[in-house]
Image (cartoon, rainbow, N blue to C red):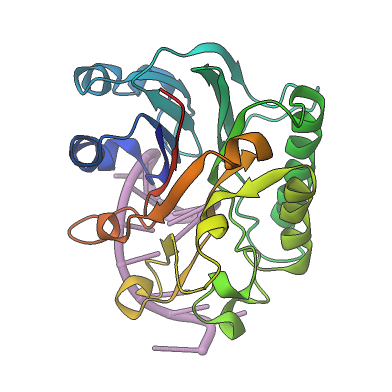
Length: 258
DNA sequence: ATGGTTGCTTAGCAA
């Protein structure tokens, strides 16, 4: 089973790119983030014509997450459902072939010390608590998404420029490590201990031509699933060309699954 | 370098 995660930065602006990528790469499951459309504007027909079921949790202008799957999905869950009043559409999950798969768009966090940064850290802790409650260590589970955290300096082209930002701040990295401590494995790191691989390049800094990138999009797997992860990669090619998303798709392949 | 670009929505916000 080939699973991907991709922050599209608007599914409306990126639909043709998405369809071309699905046709070329043939993933079985794709977790999407930053749809920026309400559910009634999600391009369900185009995705189904490409051979994928789709479930989405969107909102107008901001955020929005979805899962595309060639296999049927069941037990759809939307949001954190922890009693906190939160209108931001950042989480959806579905069961596919016996695996619970989450598509998550972690808050960016704005500036260190801001309200947004506090919300980011709180949201990460809410998600961790949700997984602790709903996902046992033995369960087959994937947490995929734009996590807006580069795990360590290997994942940052220019650490000195980024270490004081919300993407690399020690508190953000510590919050991400708590997912690892809970038994989730970074599938990309599993196969690539060396640095120099990135999934996001800032439009503003002209980051892609300078390769001033960070690895902030991740596919985390429970230990049982991680043992079946045969390869992991980042499709840097998909960041090239006209009107790209600022993110590249990240991919992980699992054996002994449909 | 407190810069720069992109998308959504329509001048300003978010990333």
